[in-house]
Length: 139
Length: 146
Image (cartoon, rainbow over the protein chains, first blue to last red):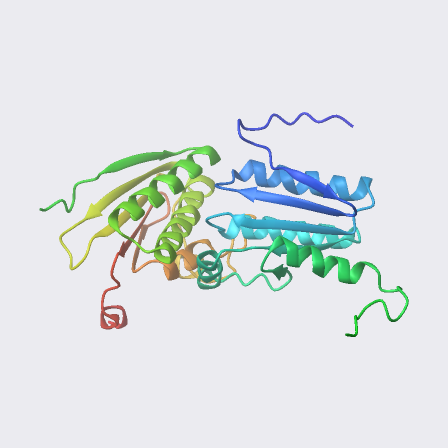
């Protein structure tokens, strides 16, 4: 498989692997082409590894318009078809307010207030068959 | 001080790189004028939607940014101008969910909800100009219900 992609100068988004989870950190103002490339990169990474979860950290993003909203929804949908859960973490309040007024509530997206919460959410689901008793700690 | 009608900046919209510049310019200008964080974000998001329309549907164009100081509070007016095919059915283009591209169809109608004043001038074959204005202090509601 060859990649003929010639990216824009600041066109890369860091994608970190934490065990079975991919941590994607979006920062600043994203190019349309960068966002589309990211979508493809994530799908390929999920398919070629044992990824069960994707966390997209939006805490460094100042604006989500309908284009980026669509990209996020599509990343989640594609990950879902590849048996991975997606959680969007750390959206800023101003971004959330604006998205809703814009008309985008993105009902298919799961969210968490922080990356840590998102990882916890995914970890809680990753092992549904664990023996009883390990789930809850009784004081 | 009167600066109404004098365009402060003219930015080209010919690539997705230009969209980034437009967003940055709008955020910077809005912040300097004293827009709050939520209003800044709304205006930048509206600008992003409209600039993308100019690029995708209008075949490119430009945005004129004008700082308004003749109102009750400072304001920012943005005019997105293209010489594209124009909008045949404006009513439909403004309705949520209508899209002629591969977006979510929230661009025009969504942008209208994010700003204080909104106007479209378009006819088939004559291009499109979408003008939006927001003020650092929201004007009284009764104006919108006219």
